[in-house]
Image (cartoon, rainbow, N blue to C red; front, side, top):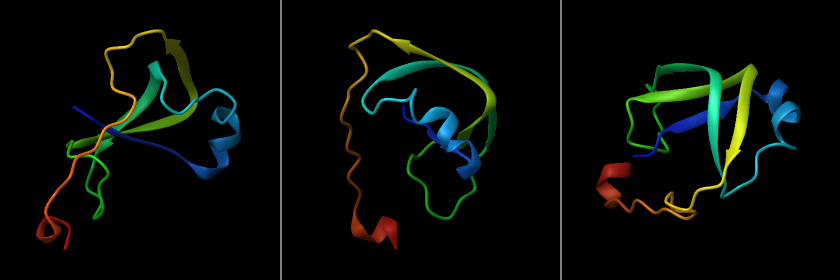
Length: 78
């Protein structure tokens, strides 16, 4: 399944030259928390938060889809 991840605004510059959209990464040293946000990007009960100590290693694998859509009925959004 999918899981939502976020980076605090003050840390974005630490990761923007590392993270490439559509790529997969092995992530170490990150925080896992309950996803209790009103608007969720994934149907997972947890969220990942990247921190200054987070280490990312790019993976060369092709089994993870680069594009993923999870369509829902309008009533589920409202």
